[in-house]
Image 1 (cartoon, rainbow, N blue to C red):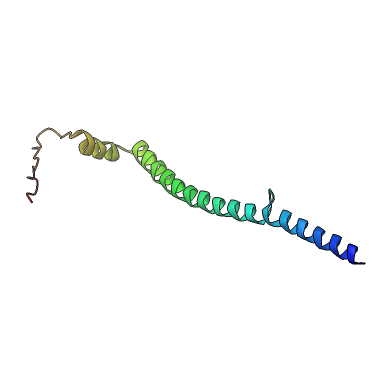
Image 2: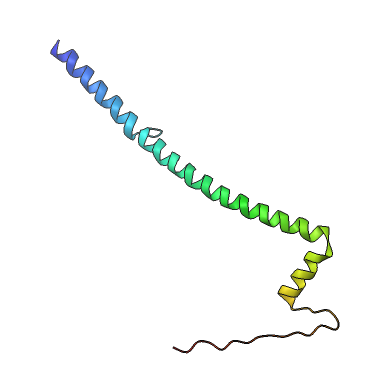
Length: 94
């Protein structure tokens, strides 16, 4: 009878060790759940960036106003008759 109890106890211990620490065990599943959460957060950030880029592309395709604004900001282009003024600030001295 004592031998049966020892065998059953050893079987329970082996099964518990496999449950907690084996591949696809509890610890591994918790690690994967954490990684999934991190990846989902990164995915949400990238989806927001994609939405902003998609909106900008649609804006550029739809009219000349966005193209003109982009040319003025990035290239410094001006219309004929306009005066370009650049304000140069001095670096702060400590």
